[in-house]
Length: 105
Image (cartoon, rainbow, N blue to C red; front, side, top):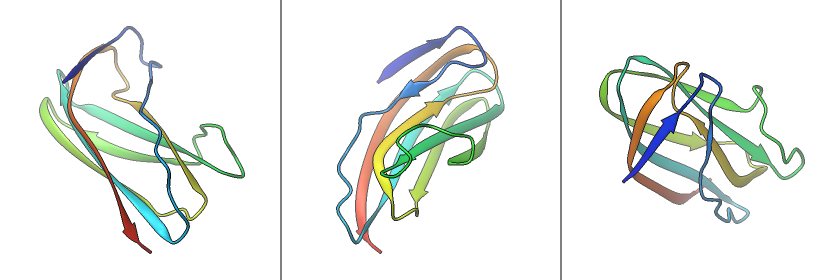
């Protein structure tokens, strides 16, 4: 488990990068414990645009307590790099599981 003390509403956490071979897509499972109900964002990069952008993100409504986020990155250009913004508010968030799987397209 990793506890993340987010000091502001703009705080983010880069997740470990992984290789995504051609012909595969990634499914990432994140167990996130939140002190509040809010919105969580997961941003991703692509090989042609290796930066994080609001145009490449998934949003999840989270509740107070344990949440499971299932992130299926369908963009075939995904480069394996993700960034988590746990909430729109500051607080202490706990990541209790992080799992990435590759499946055929």
